[in-house]
Length: 181
Image 1: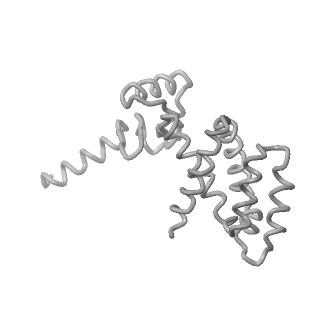
Image 2: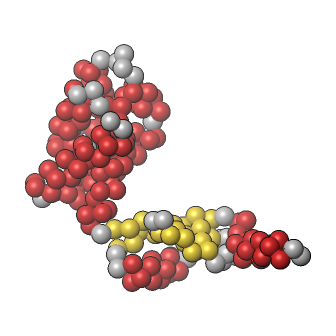
């Protein structure tokens, strides 16, 4: 079974359990915190993925890092995962949980790449426009790429809208090549 399938099943279980207990938003916040710690610490990633490190040692490390800082439900969930030999995919499960949470809440992630940083007002207006267009709540992130020269590129799921000058120049170049100019 693929890592994605396994991670998805565990994430879905945690999501359903947290919904039943009425603390879905708290669990999501804690999962984001967990994911940030795991991604930011390569030593922790190495320990979790190492089959030689004992289950008890992995549980001890996770407990020391997170006990009292995250919801006890997640700590219990960790214990089950580690005992089942799934400590190596904790980050994958966390990412999949966040993806499924966003799906349940109707949240869509979008990215706008622009030649210079957009103001908060511009980001809010663009997020609002996208939300109205796709009828969902949008979380918009802004990335700067000076090679665009001007304009922006918006990515929402598998859709992309390119209004950048670099994109228009590229289209013009392709047109001239097709015309043999």
